[in-house]
Image (cartoon, rainbow, N blue to C red; front, side, top):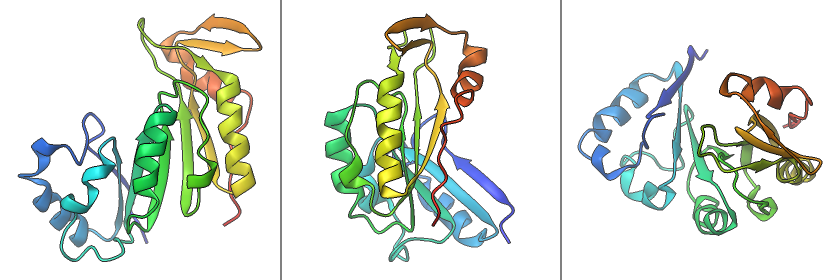
Length: 183
C-alpha cells in the first residue's frame, strides 16, 4: 500500500543540470521507498535517458513523470520524445497553456493531462476554448483530464476577466469539466 505522493523539485526541475550531482542519491531513496509514489514535472524531457539510474529498465512502479508543455512548438518537440521513453506512469501538464494546441496523437499511454493558466500581474491570458479543446482530445482517447486553475487573465465566451490568485483554482473547478478515464 502506498503512503502518499512525494512531489520532487516543484520549485525547480528534477532533470535540471545542476541536479546531476545529487540526483543519484534521490534515485536511491526512491528505490528504497516503494511505499511512496514520487512525481516530478520536467521541461527537460530530452535529458531523461541520461538522468535515469542503471536499473530503470522500463521504469519504476512508484514514479510518475510529467512532461510540461505550453504551446504547439514545445508540445511537438517534447511529446515526440516523451511518447517513446520507458516510463510506466506518464502525465502531461499544459500549464501555463499559452495557445490552442493539438496533443491527441501523443496521448497513447498517458494517464492524465493537467491544464492551467498563468498567475500574476504579467500573466499571459488563458482562453477557455483552448482548455475545452484539450479536454475533448482527452475524452476521445480516454485519458483523464484536469482543469487545475484559471489564469489571472481568463477569456471565456469572448470576454476577458481578471481573477484574483486566490480564486484561480476555485474558478477552474466551478464548471466541473474534469474527466476521469475508465482505465
